[in-house]
Image 1 (cartoon, rainbow, N blue to C red):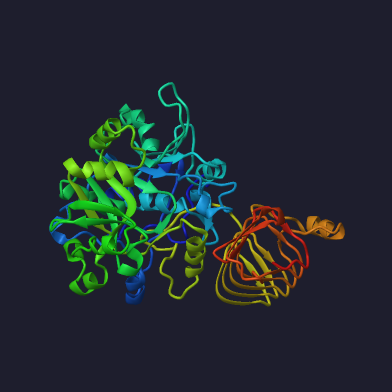
Image 2 (cartoon, helix red, strand yellow):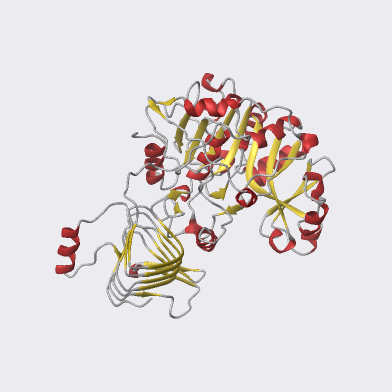
Length: 505
C-alpha cells in the first residue's frame, strides 16, 4: 500500500447521501496501480449527527438542482507565506506542513476536503521552507513523475516558486503566485476546467467544496467568496463584506473598528441564517477561499499585474464590474495563523465533544500511512488527551493535552494543557542507554518533568526533572540560544532542541 492515501479507520461510504456517483467511482479506481477499498460506515446516532461539523448549504432558492461535474473544477491550494506569526514552528517548515492533532499536518485538511468533494485536479503552490511539505505530499498523495492519478484526468502536483524569463521575482502574494502559473491553467491538460477554487493551506475545517461550486454556478457568479457569520466581538479581526438582498457583495472593509465596523452590519438571513441567529451574527467575514470562473480569473490577473493579493486587491476591483457573490459556511472554521490560535485549536480537539473531529465516516481527513504500532500506556493517568500511534507512556499524568507520533513520556512526568509533537524516528533502547551513560538526553520527556501551557516541537530532548511552566509569566520572549520562544505566554521548545536536566523555564 506504499504511497496510498491512508484513511482514518473508516473510509468514505459511497452510500452516503452527501456522496455523488463520480466521487465514489473515483475512489474505487486504482491510484497509480494501488486499489483503495472502502468499508461502509455504521449509521451514526442522532447525537453524533447533530455534533458533526458540516457546511451549511446556500438557501434552497439558490441551490443547483443537480451536482456539477467535478472534472470541470480545479483546486489551487496556496502554501502560504513565510509564516512569521507561527514562528518558531515555521523555522524549518512551511505553514501547511505544521503538525496538528497528533498525527496530521495542516495541508491534509484542504487536500482531504478536495478528495471528499470529488475534486481530483489539485495544484499546491509552495515557496518558503517547502522541503518537509513536499516530502509529506509525496508520501501521502502518491506523487510520481506526473502526479497522483485518481482515474481519468485527475492529478496532484506541486508548483514551486521559480524564476523564468518573464517572471524574475518570487511569489509576491496570493494572486501573484497564481499569475506566475497562469500559463499552466491555459494548458491543454486543463482545457475542460471551467471554475477554479482557491484555497488556503492553513485553515482547520471540513467543507464540501462542490456545494460551494454549485452555488457559484447556480447564481451565475463570476467570483464567489466563502464567508462566515460572526458577531460583533470577533468581527474586527476579519475582512468584512456587505451584501445586497440577493447575496451580491457590494462593499469590503479590512478589520474595521468603531463606526466603520457598525457600517458593515448586514442582514445575514439573506444567506440562510434564522432571524434569531442573524441578530447575534450580523457581520459576514471572508474565509479567504474563492471560486473563480477560470477565464475571468486569468483576465483579472493579466489586467491587474501590479496587484499581488486576491482578498485585498483583485476581488475588490472585480466587484466593480463583475458579479461577486457570498457563500455562507456555518460550520467550525479556524485560521491557524498564530501560535495562540494554533495552540488553542489543538487543545480544543481534546474537548468532549470536540468542535472538530478528524474522523468522520462521510468525510475523513487523510494523512500519511506510517504503519506504526498502537500507543502503549503503562500505569498512567490520562484525562481528555489524544495519544498518537507509536507512543509510549509510562507512569505519567496527562491532562488536556496532545501527545504526537512516537512520543516517549517517562515515569513521574506531568503534562497539563500542552502539545508534544513527538518524533520523526525511534531511538532504540541501546541508543538511549548509551546516551544516558554519556550524560546525554534521549528523545522524549525525561522522568519527573512537568510541562504546562507549552508546545514541544518534534525530536526534542527534554531531560529529567525539567519544568517548562513559564515560571516568570512572560508573554513574549525570543530565547533561541536557550532553545525556546514564548509566544502569548505559551512556551515553544524548538525542533531537535535539547533541554538539560533540572532546567526551569
